[in-house]
Image 1 (tube, rainbow, N blue to C red):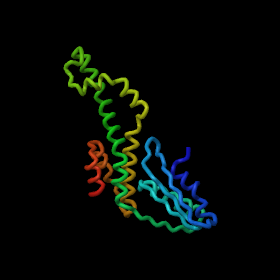
Image 2 (cartoon, rainbow, N blue to C red):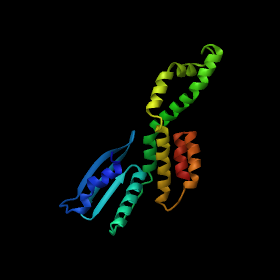
Image 3 (cartoon, rainbow, N blue to C red):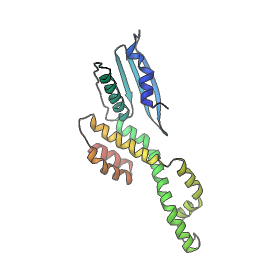
Image 4 (tube, helix red, strand yellow):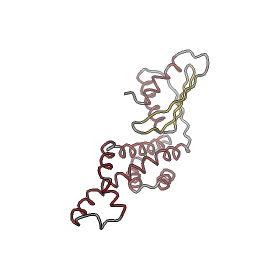
Length: 201
């Protein structure tokens, strides 16, 4: 399956390779694995193309691919990037419902084994609070849901980490050393704290 970025480059390569009588414009929505998070646009005329996306990492990948291909083919290429700082909180808010749901599911899966042991030791679930009883009652449903999407939380963490690195890469800074701090924020996830981390570091 082609990646969204490859699709963009293949689908719109004619905008810069062929003579276009009028400026052409396309809008599409790319699905990254299990989550639609980026509305992307490609626009261009002969010798020029413009790409836009809600997700800064998409632009970073495009920039790297275009630079690599231009170098390989010895083509002179000028790339200008303008980053709208509002795109970062916008994309994080798009990711928020999925991230929150995946963290909640992971928490319940972690609790299940301990609750099952406690239930067996106590001879029943009568000693448990309603929230924990509900988790036990929905064990099969939770396990089935988790088996369908075991790596989704890791993917979300990866997407957010990439966004953080790419945001600073466009400003000429390397923040890979701060990634452990970002992961700590994600492990104790609250949307406002994540937004503050992106703003302050």
